[in-house]
Figure 1 (cartoon, helix red, strand yellow):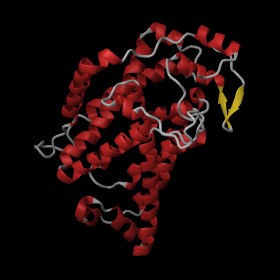
Figure 2: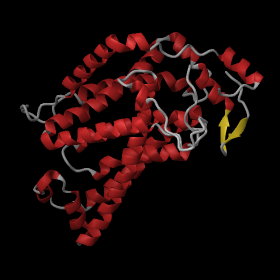
Figure 3: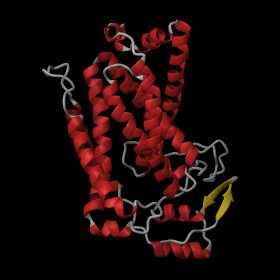
Figure 4: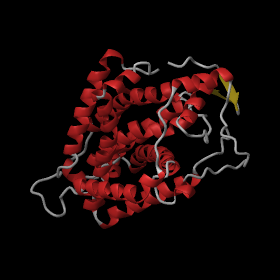
Length: 351
């Protein structure tokens, strides 16, 4: 394992030279400012995870899984902006689960004990009874609006966090030449124009605009067909689960992979293989669960098309790889601790 390097100031932010060298050894250049800490990414995780508590439409069942998976997993796309990602990102992912569970109980238990008549809530036009529910619970429209406004504020924080994480994931794909027009979407916008990685104004603006536009288009689907929208929501959980299951399975069944992770700074210890096995089984169950219809008997309207969308995207991805990916994407090189150690001893910084 690499010895820890002393941190140094870069634009007022302590950044470990070891982190930058590891990134360079993978074939990437530090392009974003490492200005985020544990509290920042933990807040983003909890903000994304909290949104389903403010939803009450039938799609909320799928969205709970989607937002939970997104909150815990998508936050890894922010790793390049975290000061000590090897420790802070896993901590944020782990801490968010008990904090989210406790805060969810604090929010839901009072509602359960004060829940108005179910038939009244189900009869609300538009299928969004949360405003009516809060009004009935509080006994006045002003009180109901006050509680609803809290949910609205959480939604704002969630939207910001989702757009931020999604833009970084999009930018990462573009940097690896994995999406069309990758040159445009891999571009970093800076207000200072000095080309320094520690520039706090450096953001992947084009990738952010692309991911935001896609989110808007997906939102429009619900206006035309709730079944189609539910399919995209459900496939989000399936795709995220499959992407998480693959590295876990490789780590679990590949002895070499487990050996290489023995010196990881954030380790699950001797319980690691048990936790990985449970995670793999749970993801497999979730994929099957989110492929099943929500109600029976199944009709064209109530059919769950998530599996169809998943297979469709798989074919599109495979086709794009055959057309473009295999000619442009080489993958990162196998990291060499020796190379990083030599650079560290020489005191070489990022290019």
